[in-house]
Image 1 (tube, chains in turn purple, blue):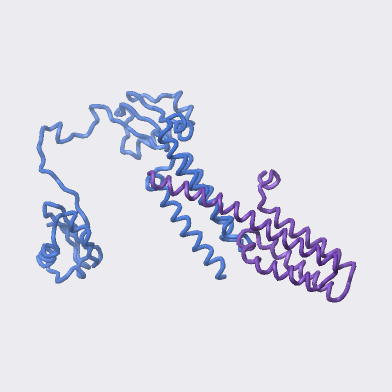
Image 2 (tube, helix red, strand yellow):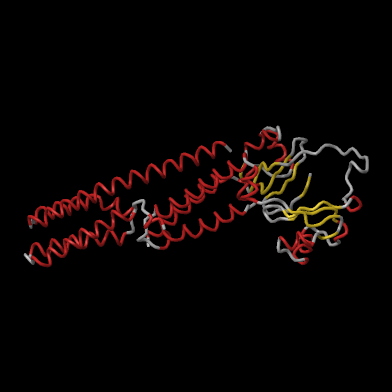
Length: 120
Length: 229
């Protein structure tokens, strides 16, 4: 009986700790990628945007394990679109696509956040 | 195709593990809270099983949260009587001295047919033979028969029957279950002698062999009719 209770308590503790660590990790990565994208927007630097994309791809598998795949895929697609606009020097679309990209990254960041919007 | 297959296996083994954590009591008799959990788990588990764009954790975390909550709630309810009553309710008497308590039955939304059906399932066809019956918290009806309708026991007949011991399976479908030999306090040598006495050469030719501590055996060779020794 008490063995099971201890396992249950450990399970709850593991879920809560894992959840909080995951939340912090998502916020850190999304914040970092957003910052890189904003810098790429200011400098219109293709290398900076590609570096942000590489950073995103590095964490993509983890995001797919904790966030619905369509949200993660949307960010990846938006990155590729922005890189395409950057390569073809389509300035207006480039800025618009970066804004969309930042918004999509924010949506990923907000997905697991403990907020009344998410809970209710 | 492979992804849902692997995910289903992961979810399946996780649920088996989770239900093992709940313990045998919950598997056998379901209290209201346990029924809720079972329904919820089946609903939650199917989502990541069918939709591969949903992370597996979105199924596993709720499952293990539900099971952990169930284990913790049952631990608390063991210690706190009011909490237990709140969670599982109390048993309600529905028959006293062969008379159905109509108020209680109405409160439980049980019709006369339901009560009589439950009695019939317990081989009781005459309501008058029931002294006391109550609906337990898991919804089952427990019945105490009137003194006149109680089955005759050895004690009533002032008999002193020989003590009986439980039988354990020693060989099942050609497989020897060694750990049960110690339960009946016998050796492999004794087992072999029983097998030989029944016309078989080894346990591989035995379909079923049960024994008790007193040395009584039930033997069935493969493709042969069961017989008691």
